[in-house]
Image (cartoon, rainbow, N blue to C red; front, side):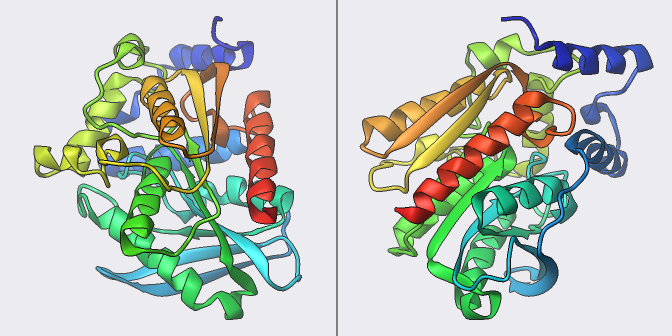
Length: 311
C-alpha cells in the first residue's frame, strides 16, 4: 500500500521545509535534532505513579537508569527497554513517552538504561552496558519493588538489536530466564542486502544511507558485524530463546531482516508473533502522538507483555 496519509504528510512537510537528513549533520546536531523530533512526534507524556533516576556501575563507568512505576504495588514485573538511535544517537529521554505508555498499559515497571554511544564508544560497549543494566535490575529487585523472575527485554531499532543480543547473552550465561523479547523494527543482520534495504532510499525518511551511516560509527572492525551480539542472525542457534514479538514497518530498510529473524525464531521453536504495519516507516513506534499506528503498536506491545508476565 502507499505511505499512510499521516506519514505522507510528515514526509511532505520535511521536504517543504528542506529538513536535512540526520546523516548529513554533525554528531552533536544530529543528536539534538533526533531528540527534538522524537519529543515532537511522541505526544504528551502520560503521567505514571513514579519516575526515579539512578546511577549504576557500568563496565566503562557510571550509567544512568530511569525507572518508571505504574503503581505502588509490590512485586511488579519489569520491562528493560533500550532506546533506538543507531547506537549513535539517543538518551534515556528518547524513550520517555514509550516507557510511560508501556508502564501504564502493561502494568509493569519500565527501566531505561543510558548506554554508551558510538563512535566515542563503539561495539560492544552498548551491549555490555545493557547487560550491566539487567544485572542491576535483578540485584536491586527488592528495592525497586520488582519481581526478578518476571523480566522482559525490548527496544526499538538499535534498541531492538540490543534486546535480541541480551537474550543471547542470557542464554550463554545460563540465565537469567527472560519472560519475552519485544523487538521493534530491530537490526538483526548488519550485512543485510535485501529488497527492503535497497528499495528504501527516500532522503526525507529513514533509508539505507541512514543504516550505513550508523553502521560506520558503530564498528571499528568490519568483522564485528558478524558477531551475533551485533547481528543476531549470525547466532548458531536461536532455540530456547524467550518468546518474541517482532514489529516491522512496510517502508523500512530493516523490514526484511526483522521478518527473517522472526521466521528463524519460529523455525527453531521459539514462540513468536510478527506484525508488519502497512504504510508505516521506521520510527513510527515512537510517534504515537502523531501517528495512529504508533498508538496501536504500543497497545499491541503492552498486551503481549501482559501475556508474557502472566504466563
